[in-house]
Image 1 (tube, rainbow, N blue to C red):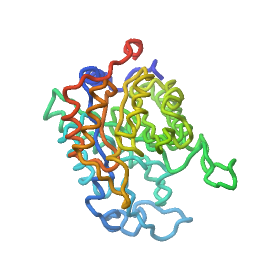
Image 2: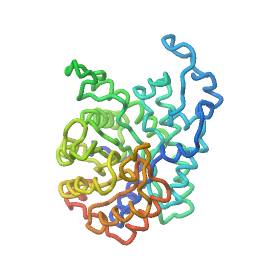
Image 3: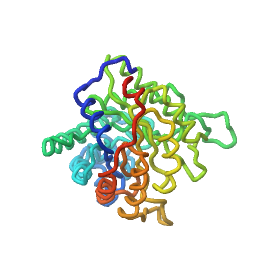
Length: 361
């Protein structure tokens, strides 16, 4: 994969130069911002899906009639694109250097919950286009601070390593091949839509991530070009392990073969609880290190209470100790959180990258 030329070598050169100069800022929670719009079922459906299915597509005979679409945040890319564009712009205005596409669940597997599997490529294509337009607008405003689009590949709602049936531990509801096919379709849309990078994120099962990385490798070879890859796992609780049982160090060694531009951790925990695991990655990774934690742990109502000031204070200590190259926010974070984080790390040097990686990249 690393032998292939970059699809956009000029953009990659700008990104790598920026990473060596300062700590770059990721955006915050897309879902958090969308919840603030309090959209109802009709709001999610828009005109195209007013009957609960795609009016431009013959819905599958196994799924006659309508389906509730509320909660399908990725669908808003098609039904409420102005809202999605507005979220991207709010984070860019707050200081984000990189924004993530609204494609966390834009795979056939995840869209099957809404009987909208056929939208997978379109959701990724349009999701990348919206983020691209926002980034291009802000790059034009501040040419000395180029902005970049991260095409997001979420974990899907299935796990290749674990059985969903406690009475049948050998059962799997998805195969490696199915996951790879889903990721290939999604990544194709992201690249065609203008994504600068692809991030395999919120990884709770490393086997799922390996399917994504395999899919990307095959796709890059088919196209004869590549884009940088980011990898971000999730430590599911205070045990310090992913859902499939790996520590942060074991996770890194399981995915380093892909030669990612960045490796990091996001979601599940707040910054304070993620600190020791980010430290582990900073100690062992021969690539750039990222993190985008939640705004603390959820309260009894599933909401996040950590203020921008509280979160920025903790992340500021990460930066002062030389642990970070990229930082942003996940669940519960807003543009105010991102602005506070950007302010907190502005005068801190980025984590030093091993020289061997710099030569090989």
